Length: 294
Image (cartoon, rainbow, N blue to C red):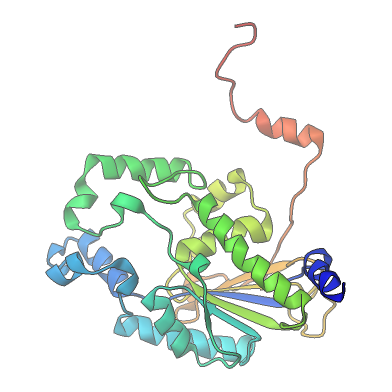
């Protein structure tokens, strides 16, 4: 009977995140560099080695390693040198980034839910791909429908958000069981579009806000290589002794290796809910495809 009560406690307790949740995008990878070179017209950058390599195997560049070290210096100075839970994805570039951060804590855990978004058949950085009409059409659809567009045989952002939520549930349970202190910290080293998708479960961001944010064209909105996204439950985000809210209350995005690329300011999270009237008003944004009476 005691075991039954323990099992129930995991699923019926407060289920809160730790006071601080830190997301880190990996440093510049060899694949990032090659794609940038191809877009700049240097098709020779796409060597036979890249044609044969799996995406998950690409390492950090020298710049990427320097970015990871700068991220670690920032985190240790501004957030803390020790974490109560540390996660990374299955990709080599996140493993390498995590190992260079220099933050303390229990051994790193590899999570299958933190891997890069699957871009399906258009994942390859082959130079000819960028000139294909279908690729350009797919990119236009991505821009117009960023949360729900699916690359052929790939993942939608909403799919990535749902698997990211699995990581949050693991952390929730560890806090509830006392394996992570409620005033503790967790760090996740992952990928740019995973960090973007995380706004959906963490902030309850809807499709309209996500569209506006992604398409705003602001440099500070991007998850650059080596970007740090810091979520906190503290009601006063700059006070380590502040009272904690039930949910994350503030978000801050920092690019430690080039602070001109980020705003660095805390932004309050609203966690929207809706009345019946607001639901219907939101539905009116989308025209009916069948006229009344038909």
